[in-house]
Length: 323
Image (cartoon, rainbow, N blue to C red; front, side, top):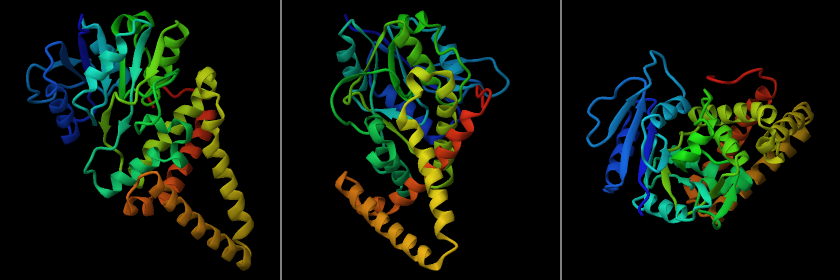
């Protein structure tokens, strides 16, 4: 039996990227797939057969709240979540259905890759995530890397879950504006539901351009992860999440040591230049084109700095919901 799928898009702003998302889902041309747009205010001219679900809120709600509003109306076997700045590969649902043919699997996630033809600033922002120097062991979330594997935490921009399993854990159930996927994945995992990563279940996810939008997004991720170290230690109290903050502290200490002395400043500048060249060369080996590779060292420094500072803030933040 073919699994029916409700593709749920939480709409923040009506942008060209959102319109491309809608077009991409409708182009799947699958009679067992419906598109549900969840929003606070009705967008104009959403083409049928897409369905719009409104939260009824006069103010902006979080993506999790929008997804829960849609979940209340869904009758499909599977909820497929995609962000409003992403669009699916043509075989997205087909690949996910093949994986969910295994009844022991409750949810599937796949990579959100940089869209072909993106502007240079967005490609550099994407290279931050796609680099092993940017995402470390989590790189597979942003490139089709490695094989199928079980995971206990996965981003919501490309996440398909059996509707009943999601309802079993009370839906998304938070107001987190970023990181809400950590909460729902932990709830699923603790109820014994398997979550699987499949590199063939692909969406194309638009990137924030460097520098300010990229840093703002990465800093928000860091702030939530820092808070989650206390709120959800089972999946957030991991060394990989602390690394950028440690690097930030080390960089500040190195600068304080080097800047007062001209000889040390020259040595630091030489080391920075060598590091820049080494990082760019590494990016080329990982498949980036030279113009993107040349900008990646700056994106790594800015992104890790923003994440590291955000993470430290999150560690001492009493509550982060709806921030």
